[in-house]
Image 1 (cartoon, rainbow, N blue to C red):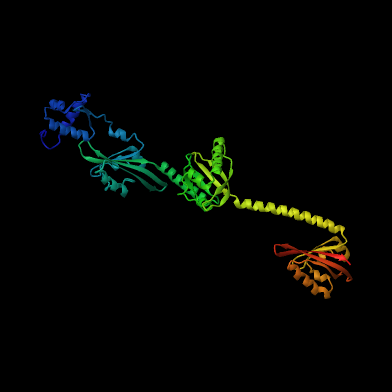
Image 2 (image 1 turned 180 degrees about the horizontal axis):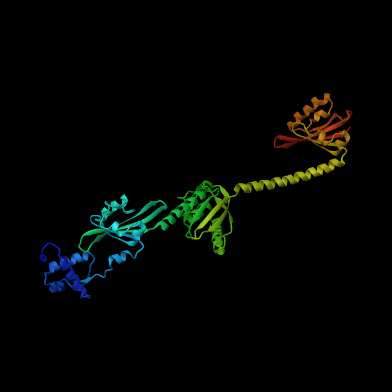
Length: 445
């Protein structure tokens, strides 16, 4: 056996020290062990350092004293084969020292195929990837290295979290333990989540409505481009509910009403859907818009809000309501005029701005023998004597100037060709300075 003072490590002394510590479970100091072995303290300390580095003994400090205990070790082979991870142990020459059963099942090879071979002599799927080979060399200078890798095979990609641990064997030589944890399900879930989030963002970005997502504390997590397009405010300007309320509701009294309504709706809704609300929103340019707020509480308690700008619709609705009111007034007026015309012996008719007949009274049809269908669209000048046509043209010139024609005698030609002397009155219907129609009356002379 080599001298205990020599530079060569004695495995026999290492075994003796472990045996002494095993028989003294309460621990021993360097001095205690040196007395047992009859060796000097420096030599014992050197061997204890070797055993400590290799993980075979533990050192605890009690005041100024250092006490050594035998490590409670689990047999490596048993540990390797009772784990769900793939485990590979390499020595400093990258030679396979251990490989667990689960990894062998995945590789579909026997243990003897790999044991004793270097990574240059045999290709081990996943481990022989260049990115891991580079990290193995790095592990010798670091205690631990971690990374994630993707492994492609025929029936789909697999994902692994790889942990490379610097290892010291019983004889003090270095090595590397590689632990492969399959995280395929987790990674696929992450990928699916990212794809779902991407689809969601694409969906809300192409939405025709402004959209925002707000957390329970009022922080704006997201606004789409339509939000900025409609209201003018950017994500940098609207980061919180305080920012939004101050900008969108500059009038303090109205702002308080909106905030009160918002809080009340959320509190009263509970787990039920939150009712839509109509508020007036002031845009960045100062324009006031009528906006319907539709709020949905998501499973993570964030609020998904859709804003529907109905300003134009309200203007159209108001315009249609006004048009309906005017139509009703006009209809009533026309009805009254028609009733008067039906009772009158005077011949009443309507013309467009060019002088074409648009309507005639029953008395007109009865006296001239023309029905409305026969004269509608014809020029009124077609029904008067040819010599009087220039006079009718002058009538239209005066009416386009806004004047009325009253008490001018003309001769009306009936359907059978006979002529009736009549007195004509013409009144232009104006819209501003534009003539939109003519009301005419023929009176008996």
